[in-house]
Length: 196
Image (cartoon, rainbow, N blue to C red):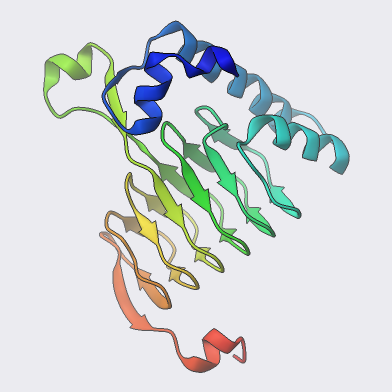
């Protein structure tokens, strides 16, 4: 991992502009692709899958289930809590850190992006990138084919409806959906208590 901690890695994780073509970053992405290829193409017993996820991710809690296919840029910037479930087709572009709380469910084809590119053409063509971290609280359910954009925080207990494009923070204890995603309603006391 020390080879990843060079100047471009530090700039990337800090959210500063960085050179995506730097050799250390290219090597780190290739490492993640090798690991995700194995996850996506081999039948792995639970102990082997857990060991692979320990190698790939920055941190994972117990009962971490990721159904293949799964894709990420680096893996090391993904930190998931206890009882995490990602259904098929999940993509996490983790140039910055992605923190996911306990008891989080990601439906099929959820996309989490921390990576961004300059609007200006010349630096974009030159390979300059930057990122913003994403945080998902505890007990969150993200509906299928939702996109979570760079810099977004989703509060505890909230539900994001299928097909949403989350461009701004979503508070705790709400149901939100749409493109762009917006709060539809507060969760009821019964829903928060799990009595529905």
